[in-house]
Amino acid sequence: MTGVSLPTARALAQRFPWADYRSFVDIGTAQGGLPVEIARAHPHLTGGGFDLPPVRPVFEDYVARHGLGDRLRFFPGSFFEDPLPDAEVLVMGHIL
Image 1 (cartoon, one colour):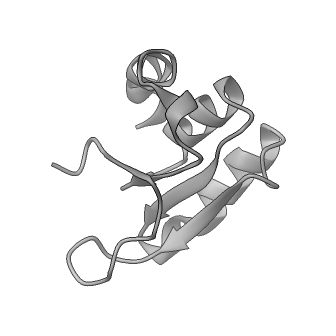
Image 2 (image 1 turned 60 degrees about the vertical axis):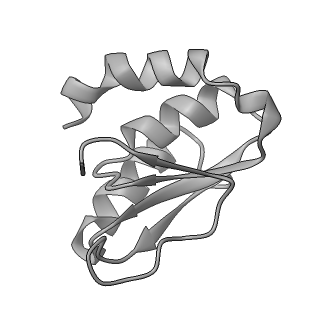
């Protein structure tokens, strides 16, 4: 998913008015490509990714490799069953 999503993630990181916000969560984050691209481009933001619990180690490894473990966290849950995490911006891309 990350390889397919990176061009879109980079465009979203550059074109959305992130300066107006402080927090975001990517719903259906998978490896975390989108949160990493957004956090790299906007150091003032904190956020993370929401996905099924088994995805956690993959997400946390990817985030750590990019040195963003202090700003991005994993939120475990099911889009169909659990409440979504609290953030100013919720990104819903490949889940819809």
